[in-house]
Length: 552
Image (cartoon, rainbow, N blue to C red; front, side):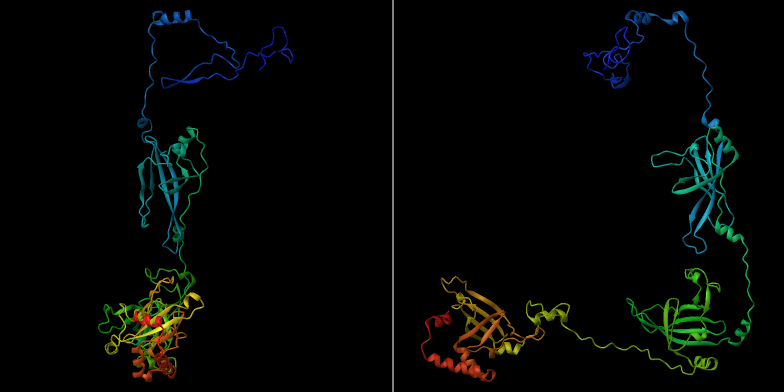
């Protein structure tokens, strides 16, 4: 910071010196708070700490001014008379700004017009800044017209602001309650008032016209060539002559659909069609006689008439290119009427004679449409999942609440408490499994097998029940038709495979020998030969370990 130059020296570089005692070069604070109120104070020190020069009275002058009373010299001051107050409801009484506007309204349920132009008048009341929207009433318009928005202050945005006369002008859009109004013009008083307030008005626009109203004003010209067809002659010739057809409507492809029969009447006098329902006794349907009332049925519509509201308005010749006639109703053919496809399978004798004389069709045989029972569906069981027995799993497919499979009660009574016991060894490459012995118990009453391993001390293998009672399927048998092990499969030297484990029969008890001798027809020669060899070995003393197994 460069200080002021020394007196007598020019203010040039090199003639001014820097004051090293000055360290603060900030501006003084002029805003502060006192007792919670913001106040402004005049700065007394400038940049660098230099005291500012301004007119400041001394303390003596301030005391003199405080004790001096100007009222004693000049007297009491006289207040100026107040101006006449005119309230707004008096100043702007009966002063209304009028704007011409319109808005566009969608017409979704009409084929002749997509939108509608509605002309309105927007009134702004200057006395209380309220507005109203009124639509001039048009006679026989079919629209509720008149006061669309009653007089009130209208919100301009979501912040709570309201429309003011300063926001209105020609050629702008204003949104009131979700509807957008286009302001096109105003009256003479509104124009003079806004211009007097300094608002520049936009040029006026042309009022939009409703296209459907303008279309209705144009006269419709029709050029119809007179036809040679005489309807009166047709009425007199074919009066009381009706073609009768028997048809079915097959709706079985849809959910809860069925095949129903109908009678189609074709009236030759005016080419109208009638469809009657055929009710059967206790069919569970209301006795409505007619499915379709007597009327002319269109066959081909014009392209623009596909969206024609047929359920509300009647179809005329302008929307139809071709109507259904008598030649369209032929036995053995299908035709679509009101979205339903009817198949004609027969007709009455009068209809056959008419087609023979009129069209030369002689072959109109009756078609058999009687219901045919579908072939029985073969019940196939799902694949076996490996849990439980196949017979138990199959019961879930036969009934909703599965029941236990039927058992051979006579076999269970005859073979009750009859058990065939065998001593077997496990065929395994593991050396520890060579000394393990197993006892097979075959229950003749249920054809089930259980396996028990006698516990051996200090063997490192926990003995006990090895397999609970169950039927064991032979290897290489199909899942759908399993073959279980029977008594004839158990003999000395036989290999029994149980769920992937192979066992070799080594010995039997005395009851098995007696059973095989009494039922020799059930066993193969190999089994009987093994018995003979076993009897010879029995004559020699049996090892102590094997004898202990059966005793246990």
